[in-house]
Length: 130
Image 1: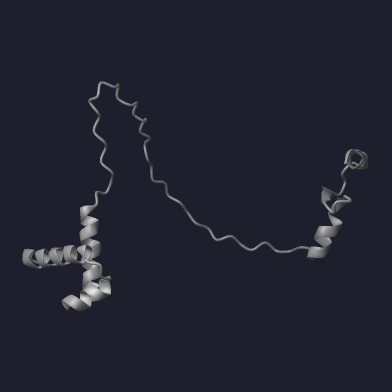
Image 2: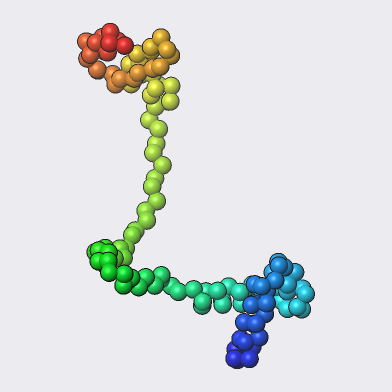
């Protein structure tokens, strides 16, 4: 790519950005490839953007400078992705739901579930409190 070609596309992209046309309309009007126009818009915008925001200059208004945040060391860590095996069902869902829990059904329709083996005096105390 020579400087003349780059200057031509820079001018075309500037003309596009100041127009009210879509990229496709502008490309058709100027007789250029729509894909090339998009490519140059992307390329030139990427080059004009800074990769990181520039720090704001400190104000000389007599105020004390704001405390700087302590910088943290950033580290890249390796990650290993492992596919999980599907868990096998050992019981039917109806058995699992009904056999492993004691249910306390309130008059409001709310259900409290407790594991099998929960102390019945504890359940009676909860029922009495509700």
